Image 1: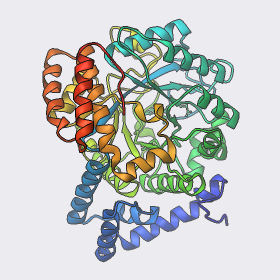
Image 2 (image 1 turned 180 degrees about the vertical axis):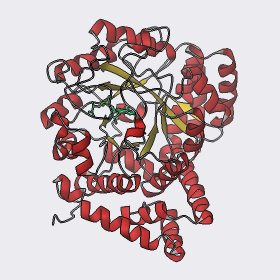
Image 3 (image 1 turned 45 degrees about the vertical axis):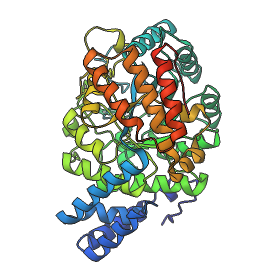
Image 4 (image 1 turned 60 degrees about the horizontal axis):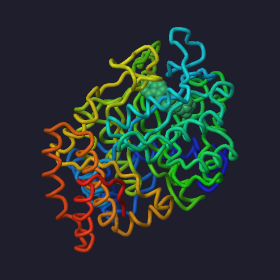
Length: 473
Ligand code: SAM
């Protein structure tokens, strides 16, 4: 039997099948033990997080009153740590060439239906201009795995191109990277290229399913994939983003695996994941999500988000346009801190008038423009933020976490959100969005705790009106 050890660097020891099964058994045995459930909720109120076992008990609990308490607590924790800010980003698909055989992804190498495409640097530039013209400042670049067509040098060239483009008042100030697991040396190169977060979804923590779902290609190697974040951190990347593709395997197993992964990163590197993404498998070219038969209800999806918020209060949570506006509205309230908007999931999609379908990685369920998403968020009481300050100020890894833990975030992230929203309103917003946004900024200035910071923000807002850009705390 393989022994569970969160400090081990071996995949099967820190994501330990036996421990997950024991956890699920413990959760089943205790889901009606309301005394224990209450104790765990009380512990969660201290905002120091929960273990995967404790969180699994909460996820399994079906008592309506307790679930309501969990939702309220998740909402409160989100307010305490993230305020009412929602950070905006967009994915940028560079290449759909891929040598892997992932059964759920239309980019799998056997799919002959889709045209294969890789952006030239000129095309990257045009995509970035289109994204800047929407108002985006933060991107997540995406690519299939193909050492010949998309080697690390290609990815690095694209990053350089993206950062170099300054179109009108636009700029991409943070590039997050979602590419296949790679070597320490390549992670070091990504770090040197100035990336924000390195994102890699585990897809499933269940080893057997993982191997079945990735029958061919380098991604078949469970250990290499699962240990990628340790190599990324060894290569100097402080901020890593984890996630599973919900729907592939049983959600309870994945939930425990995700939290064990977070505990492992904290135990070994002293800092947990920067973000957790919550993608669900979607229909795509030759992919039918019902083939996987592990889909979860919208209600359970929301409960997972709430339990993650409670279990890892300092970790950002991301929801993409895989979800409908209705689900996004519900789940944002429960703890999501970042969403994408105006996304195109096809290679070269931003330069097309209409959303192209032939190279899409998955069907988008929220088709609104960025302006519409920003408008909707503000009407719902949120501050859409285009802030990228933390990593540019060196507040990554444990430095970001200590800012978060100290509660100082309100003197820093809140004003940054207001100033970057102001930039958006000046440069890209529709008249209606601008009107709502100006009123929101005026109201939200009062929520900056320090008077001295308030004064500086007022001064800077005037400077932004006069054409200056890129202020930050
Ligand atoms: N190729 C890289 C890798 O192997 O990790 C990452 C990039 S891939 C473009 C980004 C993510 O999209 C994958 O990790 C997977 O979770 C998700 N994805 C793939 N097929 C999907 C589908 N049919 N529906 C929803 N998400 C999907």
